[in-house]
Amino acid sequence: MRNEEVFSVRGDAELIARAGHLFESARTEFLCAARDLRTWSQPGARDAVRNRMRAADPAVLTPRKLLSPVALADEEARAHLRLVRSKGALVRISRSPLPHETILIDRRVMILAGQETPTGREYTVTTSQILVDGVHSLFRALWDAAVDLEACLRSDVPHLDADGRMILKALGSGLTDESAAKRLGVSLRTYRRRVAELMAKLEADSRFQAGLRAGELGLPRQNRGDRVPSAAEYPGSHDATSRHPPKNFQQGP
Image: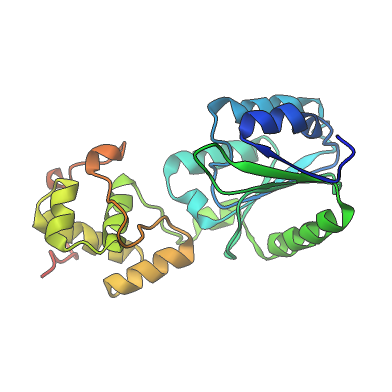
């Protein structure tokens, strides 16, 4: 690594070019805290990091991944985490809000990810021992309070399919039922039935409570005023008119 204790890079490619050797150097500890699985924006970045770490001895190095419940929001993500776990990584789910991605390597290097921007995400890399030790202590405290992946998957944490995510975003947008149904390309009756299904899944007695519950679980929501994606923009979504609602669900007013 360069002599400076802190430097910043822009985008996945520059991070791997300037700091990729740090992943190779991991020997005893690789810690990663992230809100979801979208750490790398470029498709090849994850593979590049994985290839850099292949030199590490798996008998000595055990990666630890700390994620928020939003990482369990779809079956593809759950399957990926099960695969990661089967290869020896330890995975836990934290109920505490997690910032943007943080990576700690051997308690001597830290990589912090910033927000996405049109020119790419900015990463801050540091070897400052004071900074590394401070964040390491926070990570350990969150890790100790978190729940093991398998225990979390066995619990009642709901996961939303594409239909559920569409409805959740529509509820947070501030649109009327009529406008939301039109935007999603379904009938008003179908839209209200889907809302009832979502509320039941989130164990909410009202739409407001459903939004609060989704926030507690870290599920992705729509901000008021944001554009609501159409059904065609959600791969895997289904036309609910072809399904029958559960017997206990009401159609809504």
